[in-house]
Image (cartoon, rainbow, N blue to C red):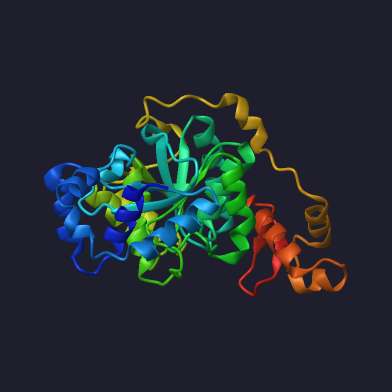
Length: 348
């Protein structure tokens, strides 16, 4: 724990100065450390006690911070017009910035979206890319889960304090991200809940970290549009998967393609942007899905033609919802089952 880190947290949370005033002050002198040296009196009125408590909580779980203007702060974020002044992190602190790809999309992917997303994610991580997403349901979870199952790092950027997991069902996935060398990031301190307005702000970090952003499926009202807007403002490459013209979740990707986004037919349409990647051929086999005992029972219970609910499954077994629901979600991510409009499930 360093005093500079405490000062940086206090400075970032202070309401005394505007964001612009704080960023400009750092930019003028070249680093946060230099600002502290030159203007130590500015920091005397800050709430150092609260900042110390934030850092103590963070470091208790092995966490750390990136400080804008300091050497460890990612160059990709430093170049943004609105970089976060402090980023709180768990897991691996040093990222492979040259090979980060944002993979985003709807929280409710269709069977087509799941199949294509899974196929592309497997290929992309095998090609040496690290997938970055937001730990939400749907495409986000798929990107992280495929990475975890391949035993390779993935980066999740969340819109709340790091002590929380949102959605709660992704607690196991969050833990797996950390145990496989991945990273969880947030610009929000402990105690901040995932309010709606924080997600668009969070999305600029997802796109800003990465050379490119890949859209799998997204409706016209999807939050994915915020991520793409940030990516375009940041002069990042945008990739989109084409889909059926009558699918609600392909309207936006198709629109992006017609507006100049790179159409993705295979992973090779993306990896040309990453000349310095190192292939992970040896890890590709680890991505193959191996169902657990519980998942095998769920698959045996479900039918291809008649939808069945998780409640029906629970009524004839001794499993609890907190055991069965994450297992069912994973089966959905891997394209083994399909969720119907009435919340029942079919075998894919």
